[in-house]
Image (cartoon, rainbow, N blue to C red; front, side):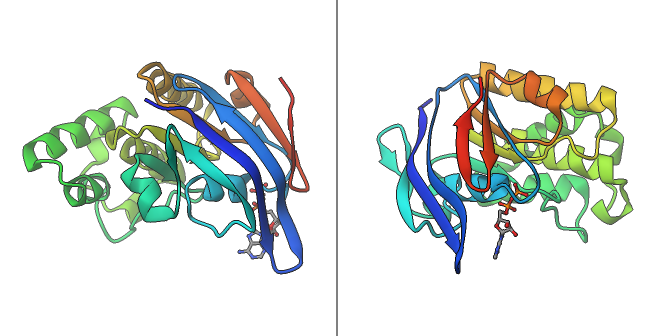
Length: 215
Ligand code: ADP
């Protein structure tokens, strides 16, 4: 597994500077929390690290590879769990997990095993055959986490992954992210929740696009 680095990342939306000259380094095996008020640039940072937004300047590097766009990032194993879960509502929970695994070339039996295991990890195994539309917000968020984990990413960029969870499920989700880091992954988690941020190895605070490593 490889270190994730950003050098001088600046993102503009028209006249608005959403990220201003942000540097960061996250070692394999560690969990970085990205905090800051609404509108501070947290989602923009995750999208930029995922190669999913055009940067005005700066670069993102995973190991020896400069990330050149979303498809390249995905090929390098950079996974994005977007805010609002990003699930297809007209598919079942299991289909949402299986489809990207099959598209990535995972053998069907292996994909099925990984899907079931991931649903079990987040505690929604009984909901695998339910349409996402039929699930609660918290269940949907757990399915989105299961999908992200099933992909076994080198880097997981999780945008507010615990925002819809009760305390017990939040702690379970954080334990799973920690376990994913222990496997050697880089985890970057945007969060509003101080208790979630406190479980990270380091915290990057954003304010109007400017970053400070606060611990
Ligand atoms: P956070 O995740 O911390 O709430 P965002 O990264 O979503 O912050 O937004 C940072 C700033 O960029 C905000 O001022 C927001 O309104 C603006 N912004 C986000 N996405 C867009 C977009 N697609 N077009 C224009 N402005 C945007």
